[in-house]
Image 1 (cartoon, one colour):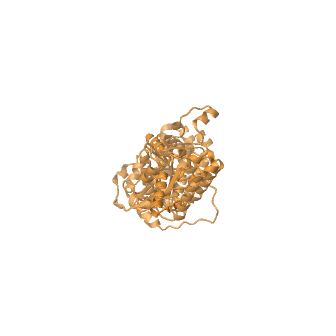
Image 2 (cartoon, rainbow, N blue to C red):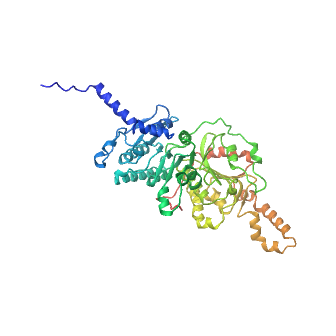
Length: 523
């Protein structure tokens, strides 16, 4: 009789498990890991461990593999397949994370990758925690055909269901092409990495064959293009480490879900601080530019302003800040760029940010200084009516506390849409430099007194007199304050304590909306 087979011991079983775990941790193997490092890129696991607090990562589905027999990929069956998923903490707060593994078949999106990402999204929704996706993939796994496409569909559906419920951040650390770009496009924030991340629907070769245009990867879909021209990316980082650091910084402002307030951070900045430099910051010449970002930074808690979409539509500023430790969403015109005028891109930028803030309980603070909407055939044909309407829709729909500060120009329709009293802003303040009117004095007198000016003995002098009279009557905040459309005219240095007091009043504001499925926002 042959020798009896030796029964495995507990020690043997543990050794086997450790070996399988080690295999999964190696992804595509040493050579592919080396190739990733040679490109100056981290592996999927290294990225997760860099993002999360040390020792906090808990992996899920580390041993899942694809259906190799059906797909003919027997030799490429790797535990975990092409994505690392799990949960951990950022600054002690729980987040869910998935990280595409380029060392395994180029991080291609497979049926299993879809199942793993879907599971972690479902867990995040049930737990009420943010999701961070670390993206580095060639796209759909061609060998899996409709299974890969179906996996994408499940992801897109979940991105949509999670929208407005839990914050979603996409960190682009490599290529993202074809249909795969729609997942980042559905998330709240996209962070790209200069030089290594690219996003496009169709690549340079396809574009050349169809339209005969020649373009390289960077010019077509690099971080610079998407953060400044298309607006697809909200942030552009110089390196992977910078992108992950930026992600941690962004998460520090965000609540876990839509039922929580944004995290409070105790502030050492005096809530009663009055920065006297604000009193002389706005030029008396209404045609002279200044930097609205300096105004914001002198009002909010020191060092707390975190701009979003900074390079896209620079004539508008949006971002997060804190006032006496409370996180708020800030919207402002930027007179340093196109005089702070509203155009198609800035309208989209402002409206999207307002809707995010409203979904996640950020009070809105708006600093107004705009001459109105940008005139021109291109703007009209591009749909400035439709795009501009997004701003008034977003403000009107928002139920969070809304406070506005009219710093200087607030003309016509732009005055109305930018958090005016008329669209139910809770408190509207104005500085003495505020000009609230249907239009600027120069244009107004031409419409109202054009004939009189032309018939005058000295037309230039007559025009100056009409302009001065118009400004005296309409280009000051006091008529608006007298009618109740402005709640108080402030000395600029008073703005910080006034805003903090207003936020304290409004902290328990209960929004009321009419029962309906949803409105029809102009998109």
